[in-house]
Image (spheres, rainbow, N blue to C red):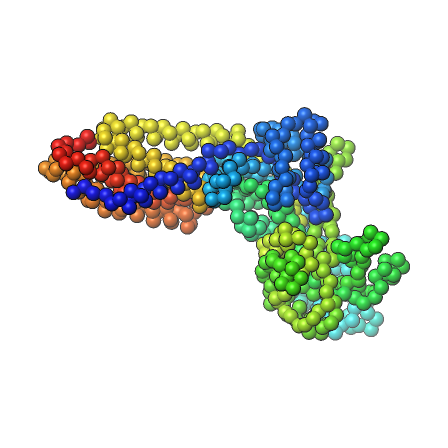
Length: 633
């Protein structure tokens, strides 16, 4: 008998409703927008909203809406891509360096759909577009940072060998100069440095080619070869590319593109990014932490007289004094630990004070340094210095001149209550958002050298719309041909097949939207392929039913037997295709992976619709007919 359990009909109904619900957000278009995010010390409020509105109206740019979002950003919705570009170019110099102005594509999905987790399918850069950044590595900063590390290595080497020295300074572009204290053994120092000072390609000290070391009196000169300098800049770019990948992974961007361009530039493409200001801030950030000992003394007197202890340097707290000026503090020049020695960082709230904090885990070297310092300095103070490199754009003779300024601010100075090593907390942070951003930057790794945004643009709907239109037309035409053929060739069972194929497409869109998968142009090809595979499955079923009818079985028995016997063949064929899709996803990258995602989703949904849904429809039409003499197939 031709039977289909009632609970299976309920399941089909639920699947259809959920598929329609989670595919629905794809109907709503996105608004070209400009997103404004405040840097530290600035605020996004009603005054900023009025300021932006006035600036846009002054130049005749009509905004669809200007709204302050829950995450503290200001979003300016515009009518088209041209207005978006003009608004961004206008607002960047208008708001200055206190705000990050970034391009965005803002969702128009109703809030009730968002509440239940329904969201539009992510489209790749070739379909929807997205953000394109061209970033340039500051090679001079990379060299400065590496030479600072060399100088610190020399100081540690001389101290550990009990050789007294007065200073270790950089001279010119490629030399370090060590000034020994009177009476120090210069020959011993030269031999020690010659033996231990090595190429940065081999981790600074401990192996590799030796540098040129010369001694004249109490002066020792360490010459860094040109090949080493080239290697430093090359390593900086490679490390930055790895760090950018880590940071983008933390942002959760699907299928990003990160490519080196030329000798000092990197291209970053982020498809479907909703918070481009956040992406821009996180990608270019060079913020890190340094832990330093507090030096006893009067910092106000040091500022006024210029008499600073030789081991100390003047920093400023984030708080201001009664005179409205930042509070000075004396910190040791020697760093205890830095963000580069960090293994993990998580934001949260301090259990005692309730203030935002970052829980830090250092590596073995950093943890040992922290343990040694805290063991010898209980009841003394240690400070946390927040270092940030902020890009600036100024207009000189009508041209943009890009520069940067470095901000060093003491965000916390506290008394060491007990001994600790690699696990501890940094408290006293100004806001949960600042704590979360800082933890993300530390967790993703430090940039070997600062990077500036040379170019930022959005891949607009011109290319994307054309690709989407062509892909959609290809699928629609293939669907149209298939539907017409099935209606003509299989008649009533052709109608059943068409309903199953259409439901399969709806389910693929819903599944990819729910999972947050990215649809690319190859992904559209994958969907078209699954349509063909779904058709194959229905052809197998329909032809098997015809064979059973020719064998003399009654119509209802032929339907039941046809589905039963065809199901095994369909399963075998789809499982092999599924394994191929999994292999493509596991070992492929970029477009190949996008094709694999849509292929896997389509195979899973087509097996269900071809076997289960179409059988339910056939049972609904023919199952209750007691005297069925023929089939429209």
